[in-house]
Length: 267
Image (cartoon, rainbow, N blue to C red; front, side, top):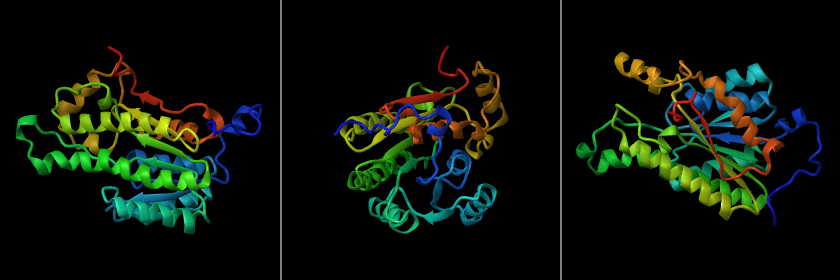
């Protein structure tokens, strides 16, 4: 089966961005980039399952977006590092929340550790990889099984500019390597799943999230000086890119890695 094509490719362009009637699941959806992705999908007309691991106020966050957008938003607790748990959760989302369907899954959960390479042990090395790589794999696998049964689906992976360069001055080789692996996993799945799903990545640069704002002031200022755009991105500036990838506006796009970084990777 060839890559999915809308019944009418000549539909007016703005209507192609609509997610009306779509069922979307977003891991790491309770805060930061994930929270804005949930909001953006809902603003485009989708009903969204907000997946979280430990964020206590996730149900309240889901209710807030539901009130703002008029869409169904429901929080589901799940651990992406557990193959069986994320599989069960996505099936629950599809069967109960989606009335038998799941159209888009955003594998967004992530974590970062700053540590010199020579100080890693098995536990600290595994920490970033379990979430950023294994977690993406198990989320993708669970989503892919649903997509294959349906005959159509869409996976979007939150990667990072760290997948294509080595950040300085911080040392974070586990994070960098895990994000690079996630991008190549996406490319591999894009080829393998051509007959039933599209797979793409978004690689943000420096984004104003808790992960960034908790860093020392001198480090933050160093990063800012390295961005040609001269400012740090607000998470809300990313949501439209996720909506684009989730929509029929780019049905021939698969295996791509969309870099959004204010020019950080260009010099």
